[in-house]
Image (cartoon, rainbow, N blue to C red; front, side):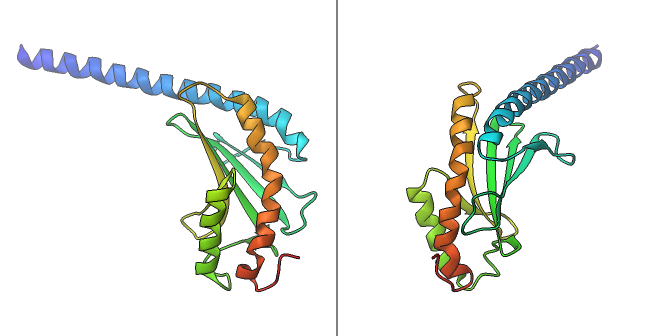
Length: 177
């Protein structure tokens, strides 16, 4: 009898867990669709066409090429996580590739500059697990979906080009002029 009760309790808990996972995925999908609409409006303002990733269905990607003085382009990845966040990661492309902290002329100087940018700039700067430099912003969705704030972040991306100009002495020894 105790065994039957224990099995019944486990079955109920498993069903509740499956329901919670399904609700979480529904919420994540709803957030992705809201984000799709905001990016469809905000992207053209900065000449970026955001597309849903084929490999990561909760990510959107776009490339900003026009108006860059210091970098070739800015690769923008926007993802909806499973823990109620939206993360922007913007990777500058310089001389045909990513800026990698292991391959620059002065890695420690570049890292100090990135920390300084994070103190002063709206978007923070970081280095991913492969050493590639990116700028980012992360929204938590605890207070709801923030379409106006997402638009502000999208419009701020163009300002990152100036920061790449300031990185140039650490990347290849040239000045940002």
